[in-house]
Length: 161
Image 1 (cartoon, rainbow, N blue to C red):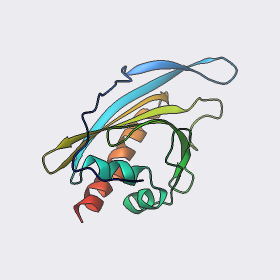
Image 2: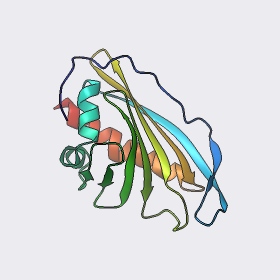
Image 3: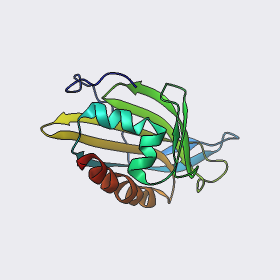
Image 4: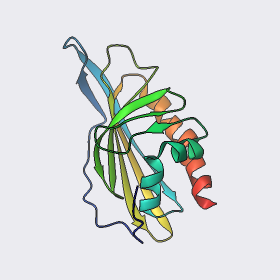
C-alpha cells in the first residue's frame, strides 16, 4: 500500500442495514440471516488501520493468527490460519472496506456473509465501525463477541505501541 495522508479524506458511509434478513444459498433456497454492528476507537490514523487490515503480515500481527491478503478489489484473504476467508468487494482508501466473509463454521450451502469496515478520523485516532450482515442464523452473537475479543482488543494494543 502507498501513501500516508495525515487524515482520511471525507468518507461517505453506507449502511448494509437490518438486524435480520434473508440470503439465498446455493441451490436457490432462502436462509435466515443475522446482522450486527460493533465499533471501537483505535489509537492510529485511518490510513494506518486501513493498510494494516489489508496487509496479511500486519493483519496476522495484530490478531495473533496467520493471515494472507491480496489488497485489491477481487483479492482473496484469509485470517486465523484459514478459519476465515473471503474477498474484497469494494475498497475506498482510508474510509471503507467491504468484504465477503465466511468461516469454516458456516453451513456448507450458506452464502458468504458481508463485512463492512468504516473508518472515521477522530482526534488521536480512528473510530472503526464494523457492520457484519448475512450471517447464518444462530451464529451472529458468537461472531460479535469474536470481533471484540480477537480483533478490537488486540488492535487497540497493537496500534498503541
